Image (cartoon, rainbow over all chains, first blue to last red):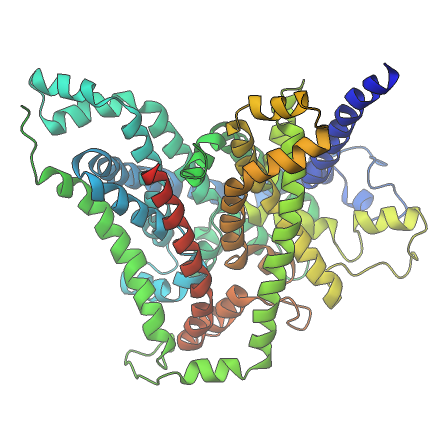
Length: 282
Length: 293
């Protein structure tokens, strides 16, 4: 009996140890950002102090500096603006494309869909050199609009792919019934399919938006002025003055940026993962 | 019978296709054209120079080093990710109290912007105020006046960028594997348990083999995202010290964007294409299989 209990207990204890170990290691940098944000510089810079504890009382100075004396609020606004426009462009192009590929084009619609998805694999680090020429040809160099134009190249493929899955899961009969009742194909798409896939659309909105906040390479390549940057590039490249790192404000910026985005993304992650695992999971 | 309009389908998908062709397809072709030219940032004319750029970069020891680093970076981090993600996914499979909270903590490295996460690590690995060094000093594992230069010493720097990238990719592989685990019918491992197989035997002989297709997906996307990434390295080391942590994407960036040599940068980034072709082949194959079954 005792042996039986041991074989029952052992895997469970190990599971908990594994969970706690990974949670601590993976979340540690964010905990460290939190600690650093509220520590005085003199506390941070004293090697004798235990870095895990507050030897001196906590302070809000780093946050004050970040919001009043840096471009951080501007970068947040830039990012939100770019995110909003990219989401609109993505929906306008991906929704009809996904519907057409899922419903109107038969066999080769799926193949074309896979082809579109494959373009998501072409990385920014292959395209940034020619795209920098394209961006300057369009007169968008050093403008927030450069990334607004370029980002849909990776949000559209992924969103089309996800929405295709959504549209396919809606029974065809519903659409046929609506069309017998007098709706046109386009009418069925606008009045029936779009309202029925609000959760899919919401997923796409979140993804397009979070991908915009996470992208680094294009924004770094196309935008050179600090004032036009997004958060993801502005914080690591322009918040560092000369060789001086203001770690308190830097970590405050990191924390403020990563937690909301992380939280939003987390809510919809399972849907996102479905996009990758089509074909491997049945 | 409902009349379907034949032109409506193409009219609805064409805008998206045109957008992607214009801003992915055209630049993709341009990358090849630049790689066989002598294009600079300011130049307007185009001169075909054949494979001259490829010959010159292949003779460049810095590029060969970057190519080698790219493989070390990708293979090492993917092996670590695969081991870690398998263990982690198995530990998260069953429901347990606080599962959502744990999931949130574990996913943070993937869902937070990677440039921001890397910056957090840059502070943790600081040459003077590194908390890791502080702990090591505290336990008398290293000398207080000779703490490790995590990002300043070639071997340590390479190790650091690999581990930070592993940290970033681990959650992504874990959720993919979790999706696969939940898709395995519960009765199969249960039947094995009834037949007398223990926890480890069930895991290694039933669960992991059944997971192979999904493990392939995790490795495939993980390898692409790693081989083509430059964010972690750009933020942590900028390819230094002494170019010892340069990889293909950072080389292409420094040559083509910062160095204004479009042709050389394009030629360097073309070395990313073979992996993409392999990846595309596997995606198509698995999609085809999904279609057939």
